[in-house]
Image (cartoon, rainbow, N blue to C red; front, side, top):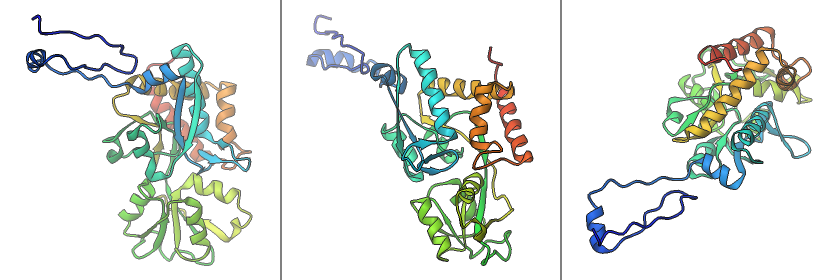
Amino acid sequence: MNALRVVRLSIQAGLRVVAAPAVGMVLLAGLPSVVLAETVWDKVARTGVLIAGTSATANPFAYRTGKGELAGYSVEMLRLIEAQLEQDLGRDIELKLRTLPSDGRIPAIESGRVDLVCDASSFTWERERRVDFSVSYGLTGTRLLVRRDRPLKDPENLTGVRVAALPQTTNEKAMRQRNADVVLFQDRRDAYVALAQGEVDALGADGILLEAWLSNNPLADNYELVSTPYSQEGIACMVPENNSDLLDTVNYTLTRYMQDFLDEDPAAVAIFDRWFGPESDVPLTRDLRALVIDNMQLVLDFRESLP
């Protein structure tokens, strides 16, 4: 046993195994190896920085304002998560926001470029294999935007219809399932231009995003939303796999917010109404607002009521 030397190192950045003499390595070869990578929770606790991915074009969830600032319902959820992390870790936390394209969100999480993503992301089983999802804090669904002078002959039959969509989104998936001729755009703004210029027949996106675009477009009368909903999806945050401490905090924060909203807490109601209330860019219809509230209640029914 004299040949076996144990070297203790700091675990600040995770446990590291240092090579021992040859004889010691032979003796250690039969023992199970242990590698503890630094979790996001540990990294944030060490650095005091939370790096979050979001969107620059997904109004009202996450978008860049005319002043160049990032705003939206999901951005407000990130700020609530920041505040909860400060409370849990007992230190100041700086939230840094990075905008990501739709097909760059999961690679950014997997590579560690961002610690989590909250924008207009919705759950799919394919995504779940690569990241973990939070509870759902919003609802959306794929709809089509078309020009009034070029309406669809049959919204139920999209075979051969040229539909613009962003890559690796549930909108792209929904359109392909309907046999549409999908034309991919990296930037949502380019997709709107393509529709305006007649390069595509329709634009497939989350209905709430399309409504927000119409609300802010002086030429909105030239367009209309196809009434048929092609999917219904819950909006959630995404975190790296095997980061349960972070996911617990994210879920607690979102659940706390939803419970406060249902309890008519003024601060929580103000956040919701800022983005979906009567004076917002996307005022929800009575039926859709009731659906969102039902979704919140369903999430809470599966979890313990918070004090």
